[in-house]
Image 1 (spheres, rainbow, N blue to C red):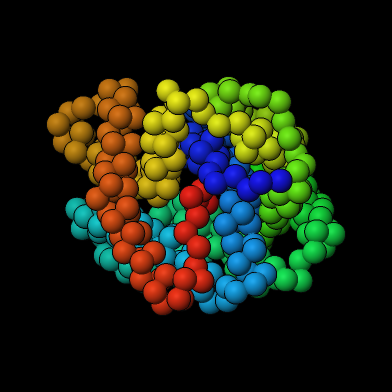
Image 2: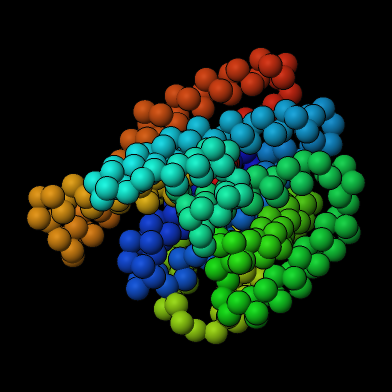
Amino acid sequence: MARRHHYLTLDALRGVAAFAVMIYHQQHAKFVGHGYLAVDFFFVLSGFVIARAYESKLQSTMHFSDFALVRIARLYPLLIAATLLSTAYMVMSSLGRGQDLRWLVVLPAALLAVPDPSGTLPPDPFPLLPVVWSLFFELFANLIYAACTEWLSTRRLAALVAGNGLLLAFALAQHGNGELGNTYATLWAGVPRVLFSFFAGVLCFRVHSKGGLLSPAISPVVLAATLFVTLAVPRHISWLFDASCIFALFPLILVASMNNEPTARWKWVAQFSANLSYPLYLFHLPLMLWLGYGMTHFAIRPPAQHLLELVAVPALAYSAYVFLDRPLQSKLKTWLAKASQGAVPVPDARAL
């Protein structure tokens, strides 16, 4: 089939998922009780997007090192900025309480986006910016894919998806829900969690590129509402709900999304959501900490504080996109294109 130039609905749904994660953390899972499952949607979407942007290149002219540089350039600048913003708040908080700063030993690992080997602040292996656990696994899956692309036939890909699906089902049943990979105790389960969804997305790309996985016309607004309502389901229900989302619903939303684009009047909303998604995901925790500190100083208490955060956090995160991420990514893409002599593609749809 003819290759689509852009998948705006996929990009836009990343923003919906990131907003759900923000509410999940703000309300401590009281609302959007399954917000943690947004990460599984990120992973399956990422597999499709990465395969679409890079598979043909990786099978021909693009080297593994070029791919790794592109992904690091995409993920790390905002990650480092958000980590430093979170660290600054924690330093201020520690000094205000008269505590020492020995915990700063975790900063090098945090800036590299790898689990803290010291275990200084358990149970979180990414204590300065907890959401980074998913980016660690995202990059892990990306690099495995790039290293194995030529070997990874569709049959082997299907076997990889099935094998990791079985491991993930075991982890879900053992743990009782899908919130896996974000603590030392469940770090191992992050491997099948990311590999199942990421390579399921790659498999969807391969089948779709051959003319398969078509879906009826469904409004992107309906898809966005379906995703958000799913993530808003109360937390304390059977792990089978998590499994049904990961193994069935999210791949189905992916298939529907890649076959249905927003109408003209919704395109600006979809583009805004797409641009907001990554900075909102990274910055929402440190921004809520700083805003909470400021509003408490001015005697602004919940629920007014929470309502103001729902507006201020996305606005500030979008500012990070406009004034930091967009100009920096433009310069990095130019530099990478020159360094690789044009071997590095610039995808329109983006993973995390």
